[in-house]
Length: 174
Image (cartoon, rainbow, N blue to C red):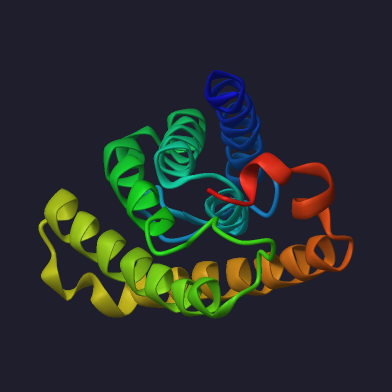
């Protein structure tokens, strides 16, 4: 049974990686500034993956999906994105029957901080400007806030439909 669940986790992680790539690179993809950066709401799907999949699979989906999106649209950011997206999946839990729970609501805010500080640090290193904080923080806050709202709407709808317990019972124990 464990081998069967591993295959399910890999398949669902691959699907999430593809969805994260598409959502990040092409849907609600808003270029900002002159440094190749952009605002997107693909993080909502990272949050969702991290609420469904055990951490190693969610981290892989986040890193691969975000990294591929950057390779397609802003290659200079790909390495930073792989690290940051892997990190924003960490605060979430996939345990239990509900996607929206106390830990995952708190995780939204923790992930927003990780996103904001991570991209500020990356931008500072890449472009040598530590004064870039005010420029980068607004885009990161919009991205994290918009992704949080989309995640909460999607997760609440999936919870109302009992998707995790009905269709993904193997994922409920994370």
